[in-house]
Structure formats: C-alpha cells, structure tokens
Length: 443
Image 1 (cartoon, rainbow, N blue to C red):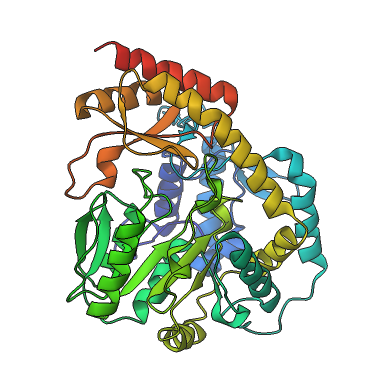
Image 2 (cartoon, rainbow, N blue to C red):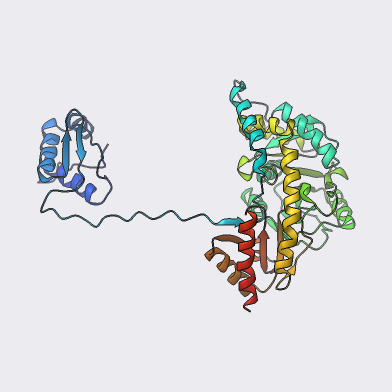
C-alpha cells in the first residue's frame, strides 16, 4: 500500500491527485529510488477506483521521468526525475555512532577461550525437544537441581531444588517477591541499585531510602528491605556481621522480608566469598542470584529462593502469568553449568579482575578517595561533583562510558565516579585510565 488518499470532493481528477501525491512521496524520500510500486490493477483495487485512474497517474509519472517501466517487472521509482523537474536536497543519512566502551559496574569480562563450550551448549539446545506447552513456572527441573547444588557449595545455602525458581534476572526475581508481599513501603539502600528502586515504585510501593553505610534497625510499616550485603552496590562495602544480625532481627520483629541481591559474590579476589545472608535465616530472607555478572547480562537469567511463607503465592502468580525465562535460555544454561563453563569463566574473570583492580587503584588514588573495598568488576571513587562530571565528559569524548556516583543516589548526596573494569580490554582500560587521570590532574 502507498500512503495516498484520494478526495472525491476535490475538483481535480483522481488520476491527477494520485500522480501529485506519489510525486511528493518521492521528493520527500518516503518512497526511495529503486522502489517497486504496485501494479495499476492492484493499486486500483486498494484505492477502490477504476484501473483507468491508476493507469493515467502511472503514464503521467513515467512521462515526467519519475517512474520507469521494466519488462515483466512492473513500475519502479527511477533514479531521479526527468529534466526540468526540481528535486529536494538529498536526505542525509545519520552516521551510526560508534558505541562507547563500557567502564560500568555491570559489564563482565568473558574469556573467549571458552567460546567452544558456549557454542556446544547452544548446539545442544537446537537438538533438544522443547516442551509442548508452558513449562514448569519454577523453571527446568535439571537447572534447578544444578543451581541448588551450586548454592550449597558456593554460598552455604542448603536448598532443595523445589525451593528454588528460575527468573529472568534480578529485577524479575525482585518483582516476583514483591507480588507476594503487602503493598507497603520497601527500604532500599541509598546509594543503591537504580533498577531495584524503580522496580519497587512500579509495583505501586514507596521507596524508603536508607543510608547504605548505616545498619537497618527498623522495618516497622515496611514490607521488605532490599540489600546487597556481600558487595554493596555501588559503594563496595561488605555488610558487617553485627549489621547483618541487626537487620535480620528487625525483619523478624516487624514482620518484614529481607531481599538479598547476591549479584557478584563469586568475584572476591582478596578473601573467600562472604556467606549469603540467607544462610543465616532463610525464613525471613528472599535470596536473588543472577548470571548477568558471570556469563552475560543479555542472557537475562537468574534464580531466587523465597522464604517458605511466600513460596506458594510466588509460584501461584508465576503459574498464572507464565512469567519465566525462555526455555532455550534455560536449556543452554543447563549445559553451561553441567559442563563446567560457568566455573571456568568465573575463575578466569576473577583472575583478570584481581589483576586489573590494583591498576585502577594505582591510577586514581592520587586524585580521589575509594568509597569501599575493591571487589567484583568495579570500584567507586569519591570526589567533587564538578571534577567527576568533567572526567566523565573527557572519557566520553575519548570513547568510554563511565558512570557518576550521583546517579545512584536519591538523597545521599555522594559524588564521584563508578569505574568498571570488566567491559574493556587491557589496552582500552589503560587508555581510559589515562584520560581520567589527565582530567583529574588538571585541577
């Protein structure tokens, strides 16, 4: 269909109207040179006019040089109009902007030496038989069994596969837990994970900001507290043991749930991974895990272990909404976990992060203050907002994306930079650090 409309109340003949409108479409670039146009018979049927109308218009446009007839192939927009017919300036096509190299808190480093195992997993998916209908809303039984075993060995969680559900990532797991809770405010760390605060608000709840460096002692009137205890996002702090016990006691006393986002606990390279909060008190902690930091963010796959009191409602809601990750993704992840790919990429990434972190610290420590221990794939630096904005702009001009700490704050008022080192290559990281140092050193 051509986007034309004929007006029978217009004094001009219908064929003239049609020719005028097609001419304007070509001039505007809406119909490009080389475009094949509908036949006069088909266009007449589309516009509910006689074929004589469309033939008159096509004959006129061919005479003017706008159209050309090709033997056995119909009418096409010619490369340009005939002599004496003005043309509009050629439309400039915007050049695609080269994507910035990410130095953010969420882009992991993946060792390409393990690509063969990645491809093998997807080949296995292609030969597997998919379910005939909707699968178990909790996720594939094989994957739940593998992850339950892994959580026991790596996070100290004694979890039965039936207690664990597969999710489409952390925010999806957070949403599932919130759907099973009263519609009351949720305490969220400030600064903290921006997607978590937005997810809470999108469920119709208020976010109650709590300073990330202070213990949570009161959850009265709240449905839950969302925390990142193993590696506070984005300050990097590990929640002290006393603060953990205080939080769990407040949750029990006030009838709230603690939602633990364990997003990158496997990437400690100074000490052993900190035990999960859920291993202390699984009755009040909803545990969330993700493959985004270990494999790929775009995989959109995670897992959750809700408290037993919430599990029936969580599973009931998911069964109704079919809100589960795609079967091929789950099936591929079965192979990635079973065949050792996940362990291999985590080991490789941990080694790389352990080598890169000191380089970042050595480069930036003369100009900014570390906000917390360096772990995972990023470090956070405190410095005046003016300097942070200028450094980010310099990095962007050089082709790198660095985040401002202020963007993670809602009321905390902290300023600085969050510098990731998982996304770039070694050469790109050195180049980015040189740009940041030059900006920060200039005063």
